[in-house]
Length: 174
Length: 414
Image (cartoon, rainbow over all chains, first blue to last red; front, side, top):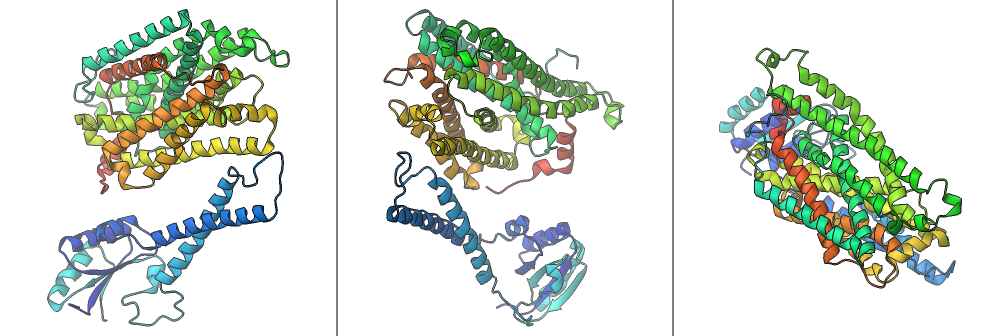
């Protein structure tokens, strides 16, 4: 990699964070990661990152859930026929609800599992180096931008971050 | 600017007189076809398609004014640029009120209970009370809706006639009082809309089959009408996207939001349909199932019912899931037209099978011409309104706020 070193800017406000990101992006600095305690669509738009694979996993979960639950209903109805009021043995109309519930259930479960796996959880102990630049405050009330840099770029990046309104700028190794 | 004067060209839409002529011609053709129809053997077909058209177009224009009222109630800044387009559909309301009274002349053909009164329901279903309550209710809602449109337009007129001192931003700006009236009227319209359109649905559609009943039917009709209105507003925003005034104000954000609303109300209308359908299916009571079985299980209506399901629920649902497609003009114009035609057919299938008892679906040139007549009338009112008044609500405080904050400019990447 061009640089193992990085500069971390800590921000208190979203506007400042986005402002800093835009400026860094304009000058083509390599933004290694952005820390945020909440999901911000703008960050993704500025960074131009691809949508996460979690979406696909959720879709697969949904389709699987819907078919499985309707499959279970078909199996149950065929094994134990309850014929009422001239209705068909396999009634499609109320199964819209079964289909819906099954879809929502497995889609949600698959999403959660995908988040856990993709997020590398559980991470019991915080180890330095595992996630360079991470600060517990990024899970609380602060945002952070980690930018890769070489010695020549360092001053420029620090200047941009400070101008954008970073509360704190520091070097991060590794 | 004085009352009665036209708004400056920079704020109005350039709609050629050719369009006015075309809409007027369509209206005349429709009227001729209708008169020809009711005077000959085709009276039944003419009256039923007249009623289906009446409930479709009246629902659309009431729904569109409700949309403007909802924008006011929710302080929605995003939707300000389409507010006037929504209000423009309200210009059809006085015409609609007149068209309602035409139904009086066809009452014996349309309403089974006029020919053969149902003894246990006669207290409600009798001709004088029927037309009295519909007349009062429609008059009330029409006046309320027109008042909202009036105050909105009056504010703009006052804003355009402002003097130097007034534009400094004092509290006594005359258009502020117009805005206050709009804020008062909006929630009243919201409540009146739900009650009066429910009444309309029960009386004009449900009573065609006087032995059938569904409590949800009113809600289904007025939510469906709101859905139609949102789709129509989406369509006209897309159609007028090229005009110099709207290009400045309608951005990807507005189109994206209208697309999201279309998806939401498509699902909601489908949900309301299913909520009724599933309950009736489970209950399996003969007096309830008859109405549904006739439409979805028996010839000739069954294929049409499936087509409608695809047009208003299944196709729009899957297409609108994509974020990108909501910003594409061509496909969205196509989709909104598909939904509108689907919703028209849905209104038709609610009305016609109760009246029409033959073995084929009465959809032919006569129906198309009468529908074209209604379309022409709506188009005529809509374009005459927009040629006269500014197409963006210039005096609307929320519109000005959105302009000042630059929110309006916000771009979305397609």
